[in-house]
Structure formats: structure tokens, C-alpha cells
Length: 373
Figure 1 (cartoon, rainbow, N blue to C red):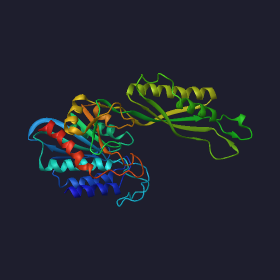
Figure 2 (figure 1 turned 135 degrees about the vertical axis):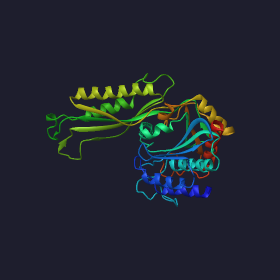
Figure 3 (figure 1 turned 90 degrees about the horizontal axis):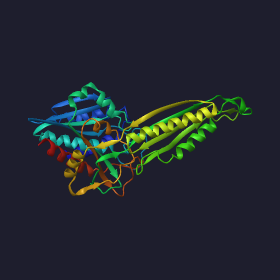
Figure 4 (figure 1 turned 120 degrees about the horizontal axis):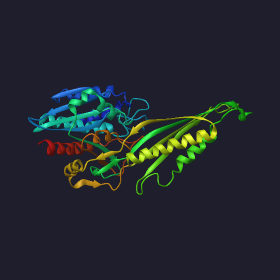
């Protein structure tokens, strides 16, 4: 059976789905769990999410373990015997491994249910866009599954293989994508003065985002504004541009600092638009709150991780939408070391190590044993 779970991981890797389009992935998991005898199955959670419930004989808490379904819009590197067959989509963040770990936990629960309470195995859609957790929480079908404790893991290249990486408080940072559109008026390139070009406003705004003022974050906290792209006009040498877009990723360790960062960035865009006589639109996508770990949940993870636990000194700079869950009940997101000599996350060559499936399942199972037995 363990070999079957490894093969399932390879199959999931071969057939990745983007956020919001995970129906095929969900069906593969649903098919596998038909032989694992869950006491309850819920499908269509927040889109293509699904949950499998294993009930104990005695009353007790509901403990939720979460894995993510979606892949990334990245072309995978050549060489893998189970390389992605979906053009431009790949599991190079290791979510296929997260699913395999939770499937192994389900296999163990099918053989030995918890003594009390309920174990909920949640396979969540759309983590990469930050929309999935919120959609699951808003789904009426989730009401009957609401946990008293929740846990999730994320594989972490760069940390020793099999290590368990923990931190109380903020574990993963807040972030959001900001789109700024400057609207002016086109003109003939020979008479640019007759229009309103957004070129200078665009460049000034980029400069302001690239050099944040001191004090935007409390001392010791990191805040970043990364200009990830933009567009000015068209490749038309006879026309001075009338429209520009700038795309910025805002990132901070806390939600409070994110509010300040959003306010600063929006004000900067407005100021440059007014200065140039332009209209401006500001919108946000891929909104992630900070993931905040409860001390009691982290203590449970520490005990489950044993001697391989590593304590982080500072929050991870990337974001994870599991913070939507930990904002509603005590919980913890922790890292699972993938090795120090492997490709980084989101690299076209990254491939989740199969040897981590049992290690991740062991830690999750130990958490369930402590909380439900």
C-alpha cells in the first residue's frame, strides 16, 4: 500500500492542476479514499476541496489536518520519469507530496481510528492564490467540520531532510499583489505634449516602491515592496502612451504592518497620478494574511517532531493561506525539511522527495495520537 501511495504521488505530479481548476486532482484522491473507509466524505468544499472524516468511539475535539491541491503555472524541467503532462503547469512547490502525506495518514486511520473526537483530513483548493482557505471557511458545508485544533505542514528545501521547523507566533508572512493602472491620453509621438503620458508617473512610483521609507515597519520587522512587472503603452513608434500598469508584491511579517504598507503604496500611486494629471486605479489580488501559530499547537508539534525540531528565529518571508484557519482556531503550520542540497521551491527542477511521505505522516499521526487518544 505504501508503494501505492508513492505511485499516487507520481500520478498527481504527472497531472497537476492550477488553482481553482483542481477537479481532476480531487477525483484521483476521491477514488483512492473509496478503499480507506472514511466515516464521512465531503466534496466541493470552497470549489474542488474535499474532506475525509474519521470518528472516534468517544466524544472529543475535532482536529483538522490540511494539504493543498493546486500546482503552479511553471514549465517543469526535463528529466523526471513522471514529468508533468499538463503544459506550463507543475507541482514544483511540493503540494503533491503534501497530499501523499495526508493520504498515508488516511490509510493509517482506516486501520486504527482515534479513540475520541474526530480527525478531519482536508484537501484544500487554491492555496497558491490565497483564495482557497477563505472559500472553504465560507462554504456552508464546512460548518459541520469546524475544528478545535488545526495543523498543516509545508516542505522546506534548505533544511535538513526530515527536520521539523517550528515557530510560535508569526510563522509565514503576509503578502498581496498590487496592480496600479495610470490612465492618461495617447498622442502622436511627434506631438507628445497634446496627450498625457503616464511614463514619468510610472517611473516615479516604481522608484518610491523600490526605496521604502524608514519606519514603514517596526524596528526588527521586515517589510518589502517588490516591483514584479509592468507595461507602458504599446510597441507603436508613432504613438505616445496613454496607459501604464505596475505590478507590485507587498510583503510584511504582520498584518498590521501590511495595512500600513498598503496605505503608503496606495497614497504614493495617487500622489504621482495627481502630479501628472492622470486617473489611477489600485486593486489587490492574491491576498495572504500572516500565519500565526498558537503556542499550545506548536508545543504539540515539538513533541511530535522529537529530536529533529528546529526553531526559527524569524518568520518565513513567503506566505501561506493556512493563516485563515489559525485565525479561527488554535493551530500551527510547520516546516518539513526537504534536504539542504535540493532545488528551491518554485524552481522548475524541484521534486518533492518521496522519502518524506512517511516522515510527514509520522508527525501528523503523532499529533493525532496526542490530541485524540
